Amino acid sequence: MNPIDTAPPKAGRREWTGLAVIALPCLVYSMDLTVLNLALPSLSTELKPSASELLWIVDIYGFMVAGFLITMGTLGDRIGRRKLLLIGAAAFGLASIIAAFSNSTAMLIAMRALLGVAGATLAPSTMSLIRNMFHDPHERQFAIGIWIASFSVGAAIGPLVGGVLLQFFWWGSVFLVAVPVMLLLLLLGPSLLPEYRDPDAGPLDLLSAAQSLLAALSLVLALKWTAEHGPSWPAAALLLGGLAIAWAFARRQRRLSYPLLDLKLFALPRFSAAITAYGLSCLAMMGVYIFITQYLQLVLGLAPLQAGLATLPWALSFVAGSLLAPRLARHWPPVAVVVWGLVVAALGFGMVGLASGGLLWLVPGTIVMSLGLAPVFTIGNEMIISSAPPERAGAASAISETVSEFSAALGVAVFGSLGGLYYRAQLAGALPAGLSAREGEASLATLGGAIAAAEALSSQHGGQAGEQLLGAARAVFTESLQLSAMAGALLVLAASVLAARIFRGR
Image (cartoon, rainbow, N blue to C red; front, side, top):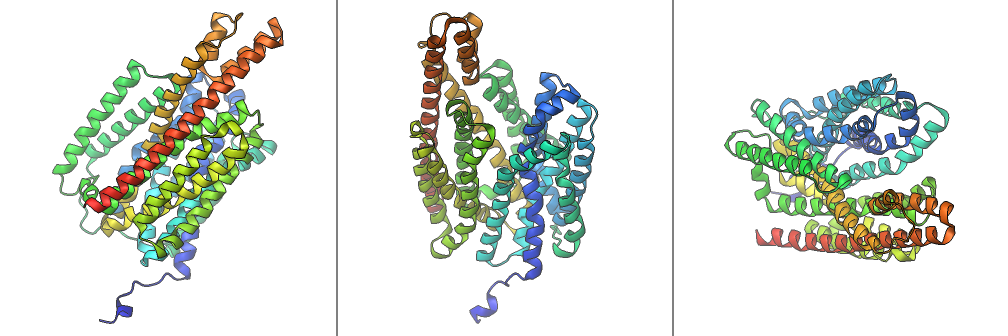
């Protein structure tokens, strides 16, 4: 047979326009993860939430996304990926409008929860639709590069857009950005996006859906609790409970003819190698990112806008790397691109580890880190959905997003806890005389607490003692960042070795 006759069809104008349409809600989804933080001061003044309610306003969105990803990915395979995407877009737009005009804390928390459930439909539905729209491997890789880049652009412009809106409008305006985007998706989606469902899909197993939700919520909450407050018995109980439910969930999936989570996918070498690389990369990146944002403002003393501009090259490099990765995959095997991307990322982590040089090393380090990780995210996700059968693309993309969510939460918890332990241990011996017990405890808890204590100490006993505490706290925190970055470098290097061995070994 002529090879030309068997070549996969090329995408046309409809497919590329459809890609632009599904990239927009992904951009909004990413923005919604960060833009609310800017509105918290004015929101708190108007709604007057308690400290606990304020945490739930921020956290409930991510919890619901993590809890419903697997269910939504498989539901799309059953009822139709386009249908689920449009339902999610309608719910997201409606919840955004109600959230913008919320007049109580309970109302806002409920809408943020609904936004999380609707947001859980976006990532798996859009990535699995890419599998149906782009049949040529090179075009599909480039399409996923644009898809990944949309998340990076959303993360980059979220604080900027939110800042502009809050300058001129009320706090609820940050939610209304999503409304025209979702309306555009609802208008153009039916004509530009193909529909696909698994004709042999069985009914949705509600018990499995409940197990996946409870396991995800318990594990994410335990990790977040540990990251914020350190190890504790409640966090340990949540973690153990989540693991027990996850074990029961996995055991049930092995017995179902059409499981919610197809564990057989992990036996595929391309799938398992890509998932391993992707998960460990997310863990390392988020574990170091929490230190970088604090370092820029609390150590270098940058204003929030200046700190945002300092991280902008990181996001833009991720966009560039996502679009460059498919070109690299045309000349080298995809697994090689992923493995060597991890090696480059390790070099970037190492450069961040030299952050005592300030922005001179930090900004170039984050650029190199992004250029190395972008192929892992782009080519890795293409390997994940292309290695799975077409009828399970939704479930495969949901697994990818779930691994990303859990790895990010685990990175924040593990790196944050270990960095906090180092910070407290090193600063304990450098506290100056004259600190009250409360000020000493606050100084050992966070760098922000040490800065406040140093200001109080300077006003009471003169500048030298306060400067001593401030210098010691900043130096120890910088060391924590350096150690975390070096740990991140080792982690992504280990990911490169594991991914290569998984693929070659099978």
